Amino acid sequence: MNAPLLFDPSTLAMLLELEDGNDPSEVQSIVEQFREDAAGIFSELATAIATNDLAATAAQAHSLKGGTSQLGMLQLAEIAGQIEVNARNQHPEPLVSLLDSAQASYRVSMTALDAFLAAPRG
Image (cartoon, rainbow, N blue to C red; front, side, top):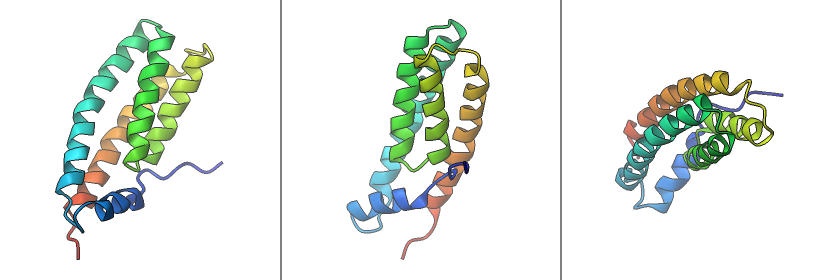
């Protein structure tokens, strides 16, 4: 199976089209809100994994998966889905490693997303 794309710019391009032409300000606002939400989700996810709270782990991973999917962060959405499935299936063993992968993917994805939004439109 092929690894999912890190970031799919067509998702954000569609959001830009829904907004005022190519004005990225509304989409940037959505991204900033996600950035704030993600910090809390990652914190709660780490706590849930550390305390072996698999229900909370699954719930936080599900939230992360939804937000990242909407922004085209495909690799991170896939990892969040793996965390959710492992937690729901009572398999805590890979969760710490998956969380590390998710955090790394988040950092790289946000850099790609920010670069996409900063690129000139025309």
